[in-house]
Image (cartoon, rainbow, N blue to C red; front, top):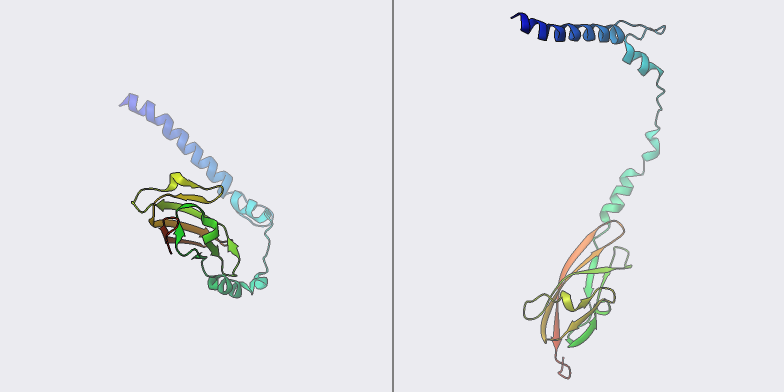
Length: 165
């Protein structure tokens, strides 16, 4: 018992001294303005700034305008294509809410056999080598200046060179 009191007694004594010291510092001190405690005294010295919220009257109108802006639209204008090299940026394009052209990103390409066609796609030039006739599936993504995004899957029919569309 004596060993326990020696071990924990000093801890309890130090804790009581710390609590009383903190009580003296933060609770018993009063400044000339009548602020009681260290926190109240420091808080009284901090200068606050008042904001004029009257200037935010157009908030409702701005939110309404932004909400009316639609997501980008992705268009395909190629019809039936021929096998060979096709520049996808010439047959697929995207427009934003104001009708301005946007940059598109090709996420996936699937050949008529269901295989990935990304290895025959050159993203720098947006060219795709279409070797097989059939339906190519292209997943396109477009993002506008307001970070509104659209994703579209376009099915492109491809005929052999020399065949009628």
